[in-house]
Image (cartoon, rainbow, N blue to C red; front, side, top):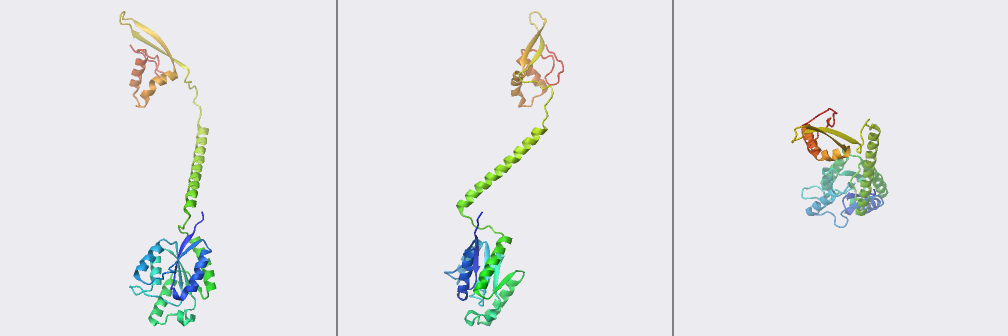
Length: 280
């Protein structure tokens, strides 16, 4: 299934316009959807809350660090560092690209305030701890590092990604059909195995074969015992007893039912065990 992964591009803005453009162009040539504050760079606290909601929906977080620490939030840390901290908190896969030689960056793109410069150094150190980072100096370096790092991240840290709704529906249906096909094959194999194990029962009567009942009853007028013979197929016998079987009847109840159905004629042997029997 073709997926595209949403990537949040985080950095200071004014000093890295060209670099950001190169990074976004590279991401667009990959299965990625770059997201960043290109039109409205973060500049107030409400926008930071909005950015956090965007990060929630992203698959990866890509950080570019140059020579600026950036504007500060109400908490006294830069918007870029706040975004990074939030991405780490949300356990997003972070791809960090740090300038190799911050001291060589042009003065107008570097921090002149020693306090902010120290905060930038501390931020770089935090990023580098327990995390693989890539270093860059030129726009060409950035393009190459983005391509390599994002390919590695997608391969080794797969995320949910985004799929066109029409493709997702079609592929879900195909997946369901494939699972049903596998289940059908499994059940067919089990049925074949059971059929191979099944052995015919010897001397089993056919449903159309007849069974003869012999019985006797006492004539009310003469008080004599009169014998009687009744012949029925096993199918007829089953039809008579079938309504009774659902209730798991006792043997005596079955016998009573037989006597009623055959006008008080008692079988000369009991159905099921072949033992002779009689009744009056």
